[in-house]
Image (cartoon, rainbow, N blue to C red; front, side):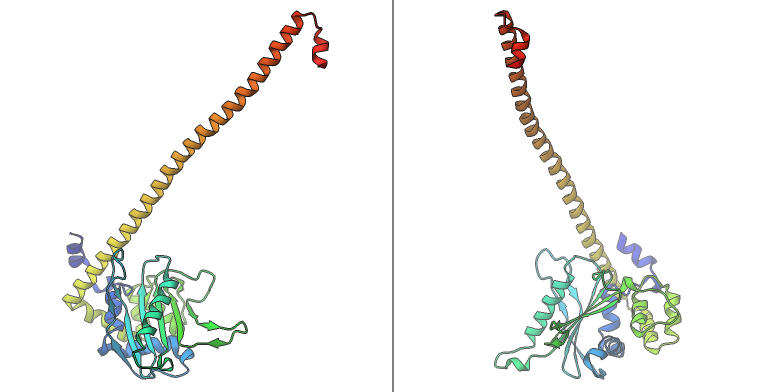
Length: 304
């Protein structure tokens, strides 16, 4: 029923570029690779030290890694004309594992570039780019964070390892934007579709991005895939929310039960202490009465 509502009511202006089906439609197709080349150049030219002229897409859809993973990965993998392999992934849900996840997929991509009979020096540099719809690096003011291996003197080594994170929520509206900020603007929910169109009128590559909205929306198969993906993400997030709520509920119930148990235990302990105290007091009182009957003065008793 929800899917039917989506199909009947949403427009191209409702398209969410962080939906990885739509993201892959824009950035993962040979007929639009000029968009991907421009995107990668804006992110990587400083690191690579050269301009990317061309790239080749490779198969990049992975099944879930384990049974508990509901969603397949829909990332973009390509080989640059200079030899480097690049993996670009859109990540919407914060599952608090993105750094290890990125390192894991980098290692798999790096290992896959090695084949039997070859030498280690033939391994190709691999670059992982994670476009995040959440903030992972709260202490970093920049929206684009690059990680590598550095010595204590901040000299870069082992350049085959390269991890990058582009955090969409850090985008701030401004009149004059850098190239990276323009890409963030295209992904961000802080701008309306008309505001994005205004940016595109001044930038040919961003215009190609906006034009892809019409192409996508006119493709019924892609629209259906998009909505299916939205449903998968919604179900996935709902499952996580229910599991979290159940965990909190169980934790509270366990805490109450444990509190009652400890309360009873502490009560018995205090009861024993109070009983002993009262017993000693009663014994002293009995001794006092007995001595008084024997004619011993109260002053003598108190001195004792």
